[in-house]
Figure 1 (cartoon, rainbow over the protein chains, first blue to last red):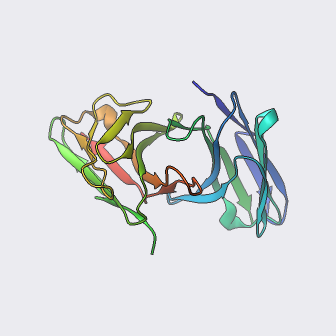
Figure 2 (figure 1 turned 135 degrees about the vertical axis):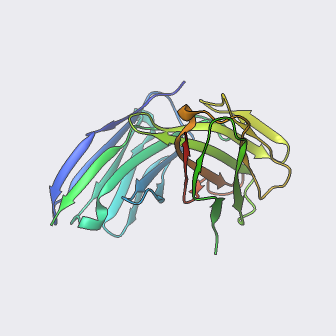
Figure 3 (figure 1 turned 60 degrees about the horizontal axis):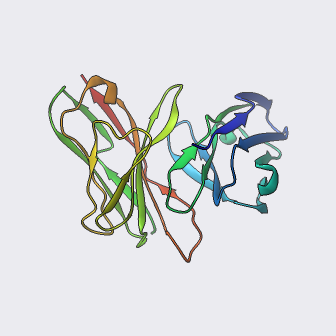
Length: 109
Length: 114
């Protein structure tokens, strides 16, 4: 099956810093999403981005489908950005949705 | 408000006592699925359904059953729970075709089997 890797596994930042999280996947995909799991366990949709670039406030994401990776950018980080960031991919519509292991982000005041 | 709901949110039970975790969505999504999340193992898909009466196994289906008799509901059934099914469970839904394919997740059900 498809493999999903994320890096770095852990990241500690000072408030106000910028960061880039990476997701690599082993095969072509039709669906890629980024999620944020907050400290209370809720999974929050960030981006649906099988290809191209999207921005939402301080967050943006880019997926280069032909090279099988996606990047999540967080600018001017805030303590509320802390949590685990997951990317998840789907090889074909309706098939098994596979999550990466996540990047744990801690933003210090 | 568009949402996926799960009940119960927290459950402590004993080995062998059948239980059902309900999942309901109000977005008319065809596709629904269940995941479990365990430390060090991440989120893994248990079962998914592409429409009413259509279900299929994910990565870790052993010990679980599902049914999809109505489009909005997708209950997860543990016929004989065991301690290794202690986990955080998430239900999710999305459109299958003709729409954006974002998955929406429920708030999670934390299950402890003693």
